[in-house]
Length: 184
Image (cartoon, rainbow, N blue to C red; front, side, top):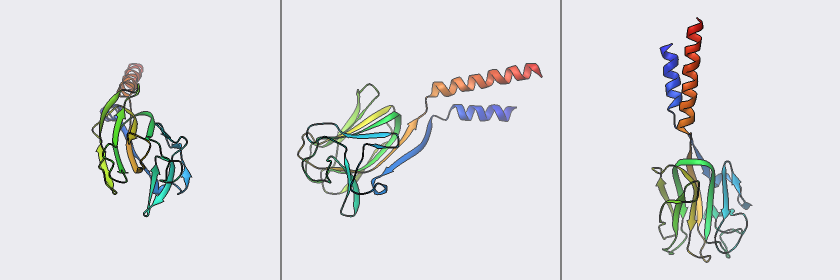
């Protein structure tokens, strides 16, 4: 009986699921993509509209802020929207040059800004670890105008499991145990 209660407690307090990794090398080059798993990608700012393209550049697949490879025209914002709150965000990104005004921003479910920061301005892939932030519903990469290409190579995140729901399940389980015990 105690072992069963221990299992219920461990399940009830498990607050996150396994990490999901979207690696652009797993997407066919030349594809225009709007949804991968439970993430919707879009060009959400000024400039070109449509689904972002995933194409190869220097042997690496990127999701670009363009519908046509990394060529112009581009859009100022590449956006990823999650179907539920996430945490554990880590992404690999190439700002693709010297534009120093390119930023990343995390938003919650109602669109309020959680935090933002700058992207390194050079032609190489950098990893950004934002895993300490919770309650994230979307992330935007923004170049401040529609005249600069940049690309996402990898996105990792963990879906959050609502703790109140798991506690409610624990409560129901304990009530069930109590009712079973009284009948015995």
